[in-house]
Each structure stands twice: as C-alpha cells, then as structure tokens.
Image 1: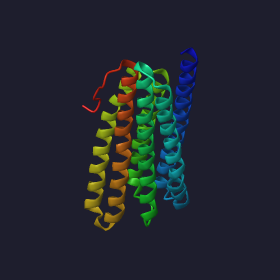
Image 2: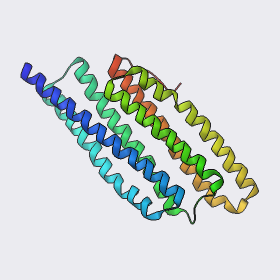
Image 3: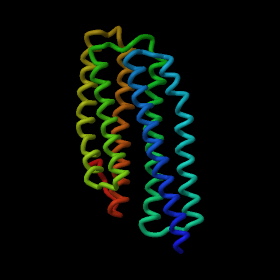
Image 4: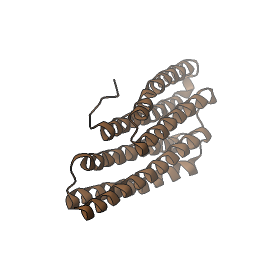
Length: 220
C-alpha cells in the first residue's frame, strides 16, 4: 500500500508540473495574441495559430496521465478529487489557448491594424485576463481557496471593461461607418478575450473543489 501511495504521489506531482507548464505556454499564447492584434503582425499571428497544436498535445498528455493513474492506482478521496480536477483544469487551459488562437486568426483576416482609439483598452482587457490566470494558477499550486475566489471575483471587472469597450467601438463606428470591417473584427477579438476570464473562473471553481471537496458556482 505504501509503494502504491508513492507511485500515486509521483503521478500527481507530474500532473501538477505539466499543468504549470501548460499554463505558462497558454499565457505566452495570450501575450502573443495581444501583440499581433496591437501591431497587426501576421507573422506572429500565424505563430500563435501554429502553436495551438502543441498546446493541444500538452493537454492530451496531462489527461492521459491522469486517466492512467486512475486506472492503475484506483485512487480514492482527495487523490481522486485532485486527478479529476487536474484533467478539468488542463481542459480549461487548452480552451483558453483556443481563444488566443481565435484572436490570431482574426488578425490574419484583418486588412489593417484596428483603430488606435480603442486598441489600448483592448490590450488592457487582455492583461487583466492574464493577471487573473496568474492568480488562479498560484491558487492551484498552493491549493488556496481564498486566492481562487479572488481570481474569479476579478472577472466582474473584466466584464465591465468588455462592455465599455463594446460601447466605445460602436460609438466610433457611428462616426466612422467606413470602418465597419475593422470594428467588427475588433468586437470579435474583445469577445474572445472576455471568454478567457470566464475560463479562469472555471479553473477557480476547480481549485475550490480541490481545496474543500465542494462544488461552487463562482459565475454568479
């Protein structure tokens, strides 16, 4: 039994390390997506799109490792809870990276850079989401319920900023109807960035589950 427990502990440690690596890679994808949108950099945008396959592979590796540990070690109680949460968190990180790739794909369809009157605020929205991600991953590493809840609470600010940006874009479009294509692309970029905040909230819920064993809805 002690030997089995040591093996299981090693499996859990590997999952945690791999998730930390996936989170770092995902954050880099967000940073690059924001940069390619700001600078209308098609080369960087293509790199983000191409890099999504690597992130998908990392997520599948984590999932397979957790499935294998569950099948071979038959964990119970907290061990099982942690492995299930690890799989869910890896899935959410992969979906966050999908949103970064979606931003990059939008950039590839843009004829020119978005109007600078609101690009700075859009970048700020992305940085807020990156900060949320950093906070929730700290909560994950430390199994810190309070920290996870704090990360989720920041999504309210992200939602308010998204609404402000949307209003600003529509106001700009009213005065510059010839910019409808650029403004439409920018609205889709904002939507994908805001969804990152929602995914971070989902991760926060899983961290609370790991820490307490309770399912919570932090989207309220």
